[in-house]
Image (cartoon, rainbow, N blue to C red; front, top):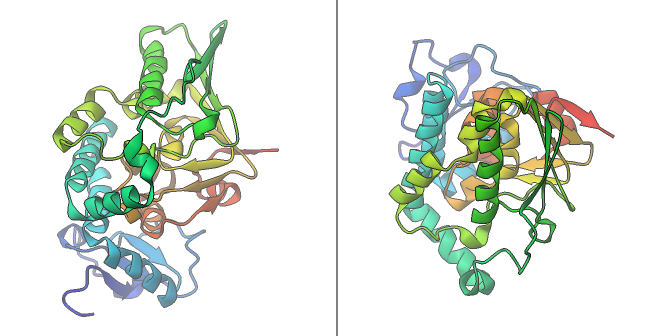
Length: 314
């Protein structure tokens, strides 16, 4: 391996055994276990690696992605490594600070300029309400069960500022009203959510302000705080925060044609809606690392096999 490569690729059986060796590495570490299938491979005692893949070709695929955004890739694995030692609230703090750092970086700026250059509507209008005067989330209470339905199908339930505020309002009910025993969250339209509204990306120029908002006005923190009382049912596309937030729920169900994706690395970012915490604690650090670095879509069947979801629905 050339000294300037932003990653290390090595056979699993060649990984050092010294405790904490991985924490001293300043690049992502990719281990190859010939014949191992990433879809079924779980954290299996190879602690000194960020990702395990089944062949050199798969390792090179990840390396190509890392070379395009090496700073985001490094921040990602550093966050995932450290979060294994932290309680949930502190892990969310770390994710948010890392996300803010990358928002101020060249990799994200390059993506943002490209996106705005090819999407003129992103410059002209960041109002994603489309004149809709209906609530972003429909709520209904029957006894001790509160039902909530994301209600922006025309924008594929993207997590706009409006939707985020509605989620915070919804989840605050769980904090102040302990008589609500169960919160059931689903969505209207073709999909559960395509994640953060791209037209709003970069709208907060000061990353420290954005971190402050994620700290004091965060659906992820509230989801984590009340996860034991929350069930999410998802369908269609669940992209970015469209899976990061549901993954906090104690029960997460998906219809069979649902798919999931974490595309943030290609933007020069890491998941910023709590996903480095919620997802890694469902499927393990190494699977989460592979998924985010690869940017691949996974099916509901794979998600069930991994433990990302708890049940498939017909």
